[in-house]
Length: 390
Image 1: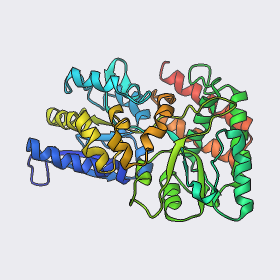
Image 2: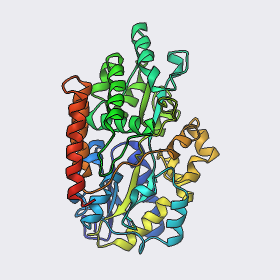
Image 3: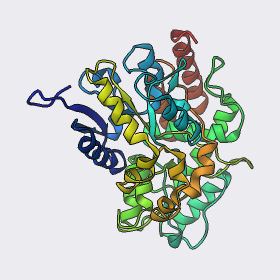
Image 4: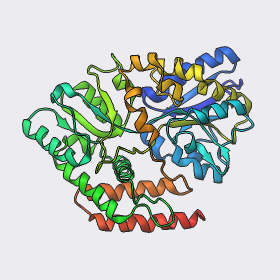
């Protein structure tokens, strides 16, 4: 789109955590040296990453790093450029074959590829076992008692990220882990019995949590966990490899699979970030060359994680050096990622998700009954599905 002097320059936007911007800035600089085309990235907040409409970005940027639930609306409205003509078929096939769980699938819509998964994340547990002297629970059924014991001890506590969107993601992970009733189709979001049990499990836990939980997103919780001795365990949050890396923060956090439920292994909600090209870009070919570079196996296994990124390419998750640098973050959680659950991505899902998140948080805060919340969520979901023609 050009720089301030009108010279050809790719412009992009990514999100405001070192995991989100550091590897992008490093690879953009390296690619500019190779190609001669500068790539300038702006940074937006985690909240904007979660809910800022892509319509506010596609007119200003050639390249967008964004969250996959936007895909349906972006594709239907023609906001993003399909990548089949801009990225070699061999690379697309390689990335599809080397996805972690449904990460690749999350950026597909109606037979086209709208983004490349350069970052993969899903719900994992975070712990500092040295603060409790024992392994944390492996099942959600035991989480409340463990949290209560930690609170009674007067020492490090259990915490969860309980901002509204994080409550929604916790709810989805619990229901998916239950292994039944998570419909996300025309019949509704979740079978009510499963939803009621999930919310009851979270409500049993919340009175015993660190009080900061109500204000924290995953980054804020991990910052507190890695900078103080106040938090011993978080049962589920989106993993951030940075906190498992020596020197990133004063204290090291270890990650493992999130708890199972009723004898079933965790089936965590998938997250991460994809990189796409605006349909309004006038430099699509140049943008496609950068996408090919940053998504390539050598970069994903090399410069990307070295700069603090959390790669999307499966080879990086299995790489011995990458795991050694992160105290086995990838090795310890990969199996869980392969079981991950993909949220719906139909048009209208982002505002629906925001509304549902607020209702679920009200349940945990004691201001709304679980049954009323689930009924309202289903009604709104039916409206979204009907509007999308699903």
